[in-house]
Length: 297
Length: 267
Image 1 (cartoon, each protein chain N blue to C red):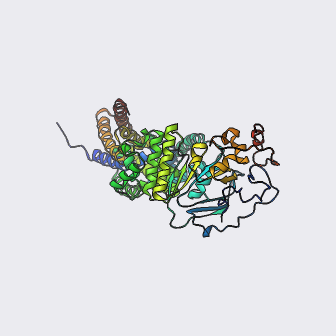
Image 2 (image 1 turned 45 degrees about the vertical axis):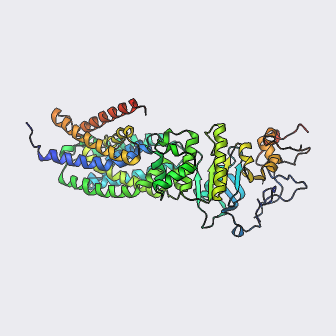
Image 3 (image 1 turned 60 degrees about the vertical axis):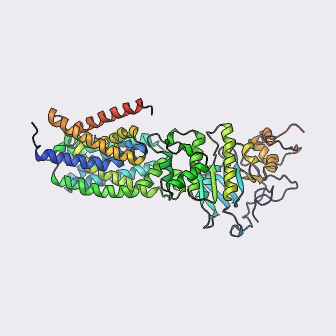
């Protein structure tokens, strides 16, 4: 079993607390980070990470992160800016190597990646069709089919640098689909997309997941729209603060502390009031105490 | 009344046309990756190569290639440091190499060494050996470019996506720097260190507004460069302006017309 199996299990470095909504965010439990007991090789995951840590310029931007994505599930990674979300993705993609920890990716795993920012330099002339053909083993029909599936067929002969944010994302999804992935990794797919476009985009991701039984890893800093569609949410802030089903995570003390009390109501689920605080020493997030919910019951 | 030009004019023509075709795809990559300042620095490091070549009496083209490669390696290291912004570092190195190069050539200057010809080139002094460099060297460069083209375009477009899709960014980049060094060294004879990058960059800039794909831009840049060479040589012969500057003037005029036409079409 992995740390993320249970609907609401804190990161593996946390020993069981006395309460259900145990959190491991921004405080020290006074015990060392233990290596997880689970064996990633025995899971059916498309990608597994165990104990990933990443040092950058003397600072640990990722600490002991575990992650699994299985076929047919949407896992959403949320966290504030600077939480290490994009770093984690770069490690999973093999763009960078972790300082510690390991990533297990079975041979059958084919990753389709949709990067966060895709500001095409206007000095590069590139039609959507030529972009999709570039470095892909795809016929003109494959390209049209992928573009159609991503809902952007009409952009086929347009210049890449002239597309809107939503169109660009769909073209990137089409490019990812051309690699016939079973795992789709999308970094902030809704950035630069308006609100309705955002909902449409998540609809599309949802449909693609159902149709191809894709595992989807979604990185986001916005909350409710993404979370409602996720099977699992992982709240990251340097380390895994909490993870579980969206409605559970949204009530989780760690989540609330990071995103503020209003975020918990975004899903429209009842949030019980925490009448106590955890004994935070605030090693990684001293500020979050100030944002801790201290009112309303 | 049309007269067949003298052999030196033909040599100038074939050398410049060969160079134009070879430089075009490299120029596109330089423009896409916004590294024309890098190219400037490499070409001015070539002056140091000339000085060292003269001092050690080795083949000047080889010496210039070597100097440009060393400069490329230094620049690669510069890109990794975070003490000085790359732009500042380039601004420093750019002028340092130029000044050092001129100083070094002045020091080793012997009979028959003309500094101006290194700064601005002398297209009409092209020899048969130079022509062999242009065509043999050019064929090798074009061959490697053909092989590296797609990875280079993908890396220029979005390095992270390309890397995630399995392209190792280091090899194409290092190979490209090497090719750039070779082209600069060969082109220096013809247009001089100060105008080498114009030969690469200006045709690419001129081709951009009229191109829809990277490949068309490279082909169009080559075509426009050939046109620029013809017009420039004609200008040079008819008005007694040096060949290198004439060609660059012609290229820039073509680029200006192309950019104007492009903006009219609302791009």
